[in-house]
Length: 262
Image (cartoon, rainbow, N blue to C red):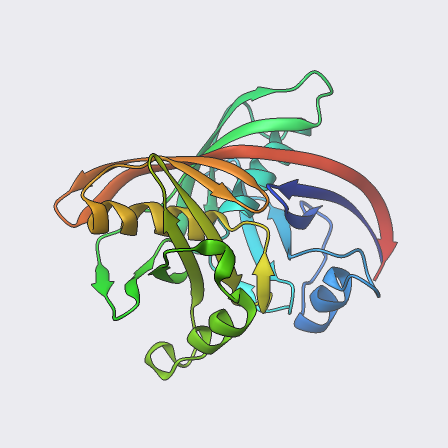
């Protein structure tokens, strides 16, 4: 079959998005991995299907670039919200279902080209954060191990991230790994993503996890985050060691669209 797709990127985290309402595209691991392959397919860190939902504006199904299912992706959620707004599927404020539950998103604005959208995404509450030797382990839709480092540029993210991602403590699914340098009024975060199996330019759930962990480590509320792909804002309400009303904000850009036979 021939499918129409949209390519979006959110601070360098790039995705294939398919409006699957009535399309009937069945995502399997092999097909998703080939579409995400950067030499043999379209190329992306992940693929999302936008499906019908009886109760919400739409339902999001997310797959990592290796074809495995992912419960949530923060940058993916912001990207699919931008596509839904751009295509008239949802208004500036929307609610959608994902693998980890229900999310809200808001389109805060767009640039003059109509290609770049300022998107704020509400994440799930985080009730449990486990101290680890390296830092903290928590779930912001998917699991993350947050490790604090003195010099972010000196970290071998590929080697260290791969080792921690496969650590037996997190078996069998493994974990994403975030390396965080705390600066005066911001964080710098680099992430090794499970399912992509390399460092990505940014990771929305990882940025969120890093901000919450930094709040526990430093006792300060640091909202601004830098990544190799761009900048984010994360706002939240802290209740003891739990976090509520968590919003991830940053840009999402429509790159191009096309058709491909699968």
